[in-house]
Image (cartoon, rainbow, N blue to C red; front, side, top):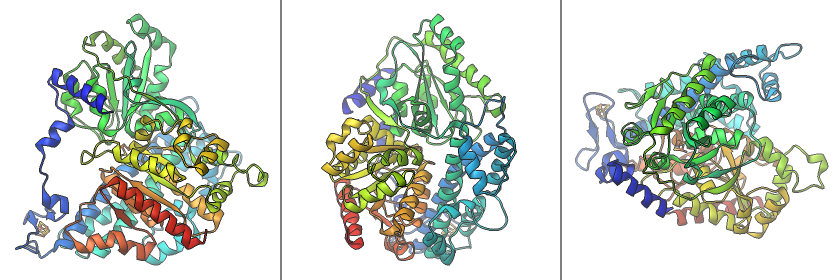
Length: 618
Ligand code: SF4
Ligand code: MSK
């Protein structure tokens, strides 16, 4: 991996290009007030910062109030991004039609959701049902009364607790607005009240916008099933037209993949001297597309510049979130065309083609053609690192149930439930399960913490499910191929062999952490054990984005301990540090455990899982 990085650094130097590593140096040392969360600039009497001689801002807000307000605004940013993604997909569902660009690929999932939401299905056209379901979903963003519909999916214990604590989320947009209002100058200064609203807002993401994003994407594009792919920059092809898809919302990329498979465009690529068209994904658009089509994974968050630095990318097309503005100047150092498609993500140095669902396939064809036309402009200085690994991806909850059912095949009557998985956990064949999620962060060596933590868990018979950039790190390290069972303890190895699965299951993109919520909820129901007592935890070793904090909040509110390898920016407030670790645990049964040393972090995960097992008497 370091060898690749060195190669790409040389490419950058030759091209006169700057990378995140250069900019990181220029940003060092980073602002201590920002790191500790005790700089406030929410009114123009400020900015104010807390120092040994100034314990309060001009209005009198102390370190706890300032850190808490900054923290919940972080959550609101993350919830807004994930949930708006869900809203966009709902709009696509709303214009789906039998003869249009977007058709319904998983009718059964749509019918199940329609029944769950009380939508009549008998004798109706599937597209009428789809449009009504989409409209109900869209109303979840702004309905004036009641709480979110998906909360009904949670365990009874959680629902009751959320009601008692008054953190059951109402309309999604309302929770985001409530954060902005509470943190406006002259409103909340009480850290605990702000943290509670943070939990509620996070839940409007996980049990709201993200869950909608996942459900509607499955309905439109198909529920993922296991399929083989490859990961890392070596998936770029020297003699093909390389197109990178990047971001989070799969709607446009679905069409790019469809266009790239059309014979006239493949023929056109050949006429232009290429062997064909090669699509490769970055970040969560890459995850969405690999989960459903097996499209190859070029890399994760901190590899986005590396992909361009190969000099072999004809075009990069992006939608929303996690896209470096640096791609503007960087692509100018090469022949690479940079296309933005969402009005949410406008970046200087890009060409903007506004995504329109009703003519998305034509737009995608236009974009693929642009890439082909650009093939001839590729420079002679190409450097594609050789590294790539095989991976099996596509583990939706449905796919996991199907595979794990084969482990205890004596339980024919249990087919279609999580009981076989519960049996493995209860008997100790598997000691526990960990959801590893989240980004890369230049504060730590890219992928290192993800990989070290995952490997140690596997050695200890702890099965791993992964999403986002963590999943891509695992894929690049070869941990998503079935042969990785050789790295596991005897119990996990046996489960992998019987179920014919890799020990790390790719569950999708960042919004697909809602799949993990449903997986854990399903296990809790099948086992009849409250979620905080299960030997199941979450971990974000290298997180960086506001979305990650939103996720961490809904995971904690769901009763799942969350281990963080990067410190949240609240260290300047002892009260906040207490609230996010032990404070929430007293209320919802889970909290953060923070350690920036990956070896210590994984040791505490294993210790935490074993303590939960001991408490269950297993
Ligand atoms: Fe300063 Fe208070 Fe204004 Fe914040 S809200 S900038 S602490 S005066
Ligand atoms: S893409 S939010 S860097 S996981 Fe979902 Fe990766 Fe984090 Fe973006």
